[in-house]
Length: 443
Image (tube, rainbow, N blue to C red; front, side):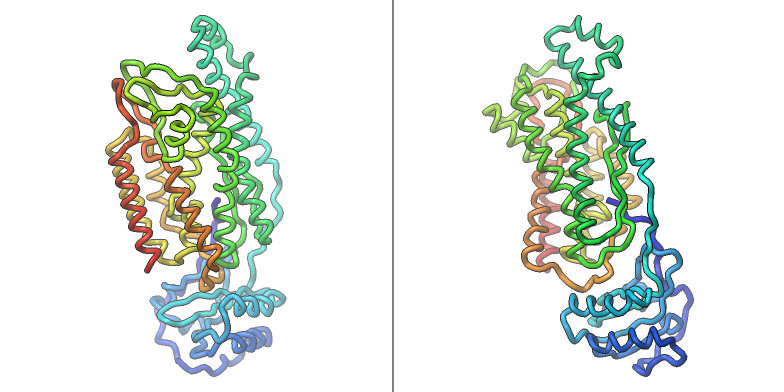
């Protein structure tokens, strides 16, 4: 779930210190005067500052990120709220919306800051042509990859027939339906979870964009939706961020269990072979179905297309729940602890770097993308109101889900039989990062 490219309001010119007087700014419009009256209803104003009176360092800690073209900061009020922050923001919003203004609520250095911005995010209508084209392309892509998987499964019992079918896989494209339907159901549920949660909160979003990749092991690069306006509060941020991975898991887990129950087990071949990595949930699922931890010294499960779709669903969910940046886990963590969520960037990057260097390198592309884009967070308009106890519990539960579905070593090359791929060292690193984040949460 990505934000639409946004504009930032910063004071870019060095200015003298602001006058701490709370006297009204001369020459202001009646509209801004009405906003001042609303602010006085919810705040004990200590200072009223124009953009020209703000020093860069004063504004840097409370930079305003809005999905607007050329937003204009009108005034900033400093002081202490006299009513509960959520009610305060509702009062400001009710006054500003008819005036085509946007209130932004921040907290810095023990004070509350109310920014009044001229204009509001006005996302225009977007067609669904590209959404449909990309979905059709992804459908063809996953059908093709699913067909190759089905032919490979036939090869376990009848290698000659598999060789014949592999000569023209497009004529056997129907064999890819189980995998295509499963993976699109999981990815579609994930993105529609975001979509409907956003629509329920009256946040403008696009329809899902699916990304085809017929040359890979999954047939797709996944899918995403795009937020087209800022979210009002941390509650909205949490609900939209968590809805996607939780909706995807509702389908991924049953598909995985059905796939495992219908997948054969067999001896581990000698020589190099590519194996999928374990998450805690995946390892326990195999233990429940087969009665032992797999892979064992001499036995492993050979995943059919349903099981592979389920494993892929868990893998994608784990990646999305990484507590960093604009990933779903980053949204959940920011909603839970606010600006302190930015402190998770370095531990997560260090862990992923270690996994990339000391494993097969399967996380390299993800690591590069997170280094480039992992620092930015989706900051709500009201960044002062905390989550209520019920949502805090759900947020912590969502981060626990991340811990049990994350795959530290997605794909590894096994050089010989007898390796139990539970990655103790990788999990030790994951646990260390988890404990660090828990420590941050308790501060």
